[in-house]
Amino acid sequence: GYSGAVSAVTSSPLYTGSCFAVACPTDFAGVNVPAGCSCKAGYSGSVSAATRSPFYTSSCSAVPCPVNSAGANVPAGCACNAGYSGAVAALTSNPFYTSSCSTVACPANSAGASVVAGCACNAGYSGSVSAVTSSPFYIASCAPVTCPANSAGTPANNVPAGCACNAGFSGMVRGVTSSPFFISTCSPVACPSNSAGTSVPAGCSCTAGYSGTVAAVASSPFYTSTCSPVACPQNSRGSNVPSGCSCNTGFHGAITSSSTSPYFSGSCASNVCSCSWGTAATGTSCVSHGHNICTNCSSGYQLSGSSCERRTCSSYSCSGGWQQKGDPGSITCAGDACTNQECCYNPTPVTVTSCGSTPKTFTSASSGTLQVTLVSGSGGHGGDGDTGGQRATVQGTIPVQANSEIKIYVGCQGGSGSGHMGGGGGGASAVTVNGVVKLVAGGGGGAGMGNGSNPGGSAGAPNGGSGRGSCGTQGGGGANQSSPGHGGSGNRGKPSGDSGSLNGNGGNAPGCSGRSGGQGWRNGGCSNDNPGDGGGGGGGAGYKGGGAGGTGCHGGSGGGGSSWAAEDVTGVSWSVSGQGDGQATFSTP
Image (cartoon, rainbow, N blue to C red; front, top):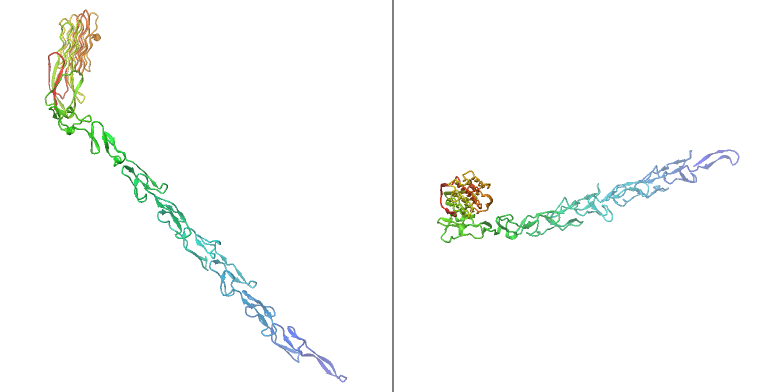
């Protein structure tokens, strides 16, 4: 432990040199080796004195860093490992250090044994925890995950704070430790009964026929619904519109459900029926809209069930010895009550003696033939005794159908003249069936004023006779089947008579200052007065009219009108005789 040398000498003190204590080596502690040296803190081993240089032996070596720390060795310095907190200090006594390195607990929002053992973010948090060597000895990024779609949290909108499904969604949200750090079962609630739509959150509307709304809420059943069925509208009946509404009795139309207010379409309108020949039913009286239902009937019609039918003779009783015509049910009546004339016929021949332009009208009871004898009106006499043209008698059988309208016209005798007047032409008699002429008896020509020498032309059988003239005047021509008679010429500067007309009226003598012609189906021509000389006679009426006589020294007489029968008239006969008004005799089928 000492270094130096001592040499013997002969002089006192009998040596030279010295031995001095060797200092403790580097990294050792102590005064010197002899006094004793120890390893410095953090080193383990010992120092022993030796007689040879360097005069000691040493086994001091640096102690390695303890568990949970790192560094070259304790003397060089040791730091706690990442995730540990504490310190390592060197000591001179065994184990030559003190260590307080201890594991750091997992930070907030994470879980695990320690940072060193590993920490995982809590359920509902995303991120990580890493160990570091500086305080706080970890790095943590655990952050709360935002509430997922279709959910929300209050007051913090994140999974750890708690998320609830949005209004209209059912389910739950809970945190987990694996990505995406939550499990969500929030699903949209289907639209409730009586509503339609994709889902409650997407929007539901009440189905057709229901009024109200559907609103999303956060609590079960996750919606509120006020959809309720609409009542059947005015004039209809039923539980409600969705169940079906039908129009009340007396109303027609249709009610269908609608999704817009008032939640139905259509309406029930009052029934209106139709009615031929009467007043149509309406409202409750019209049980089926548009059908033929009558409440009362027009004149000539009567109710039969719900329809108006022509009033017939089916329930009429004939009076006065008359008999029922043909099929009573096929004979209609014109007024509100049937008459004997409409429903019945006289089984004996009927004679019409009333002459003039107004006909007698009858209706055939059944199909058959009409036996007719027509007598026309004769011509009027002249003022000096000339006789009027004779009247015609025409007979024939006319075919008729049941319910045919038969009109009988009877011609009147022409007016007779006085003084220097001629006579008027006779009126024509005729029969028409349903407005069609079937048989005509022409009237006689009016006499001229000719001192007995100018009688009127006779009525047609079938062609009319010509009138006569004297003293230079001419009589009028008789009519035939196609042409009227021509007017006779006058003399002494006096005018001629008019020709008859195609429509059957007799020709007029000039001036018509004498007597009128007889009326009938067609009217006879008038005569004239020629003081000092003679007036002409009027032409007789007929199928074609006879011509009037001329005026002059003597008055010419008028020609007779023609008689005529339609092609379908059979058994026709013609004759001329007699004077006076006409008449008609017939028997109806």
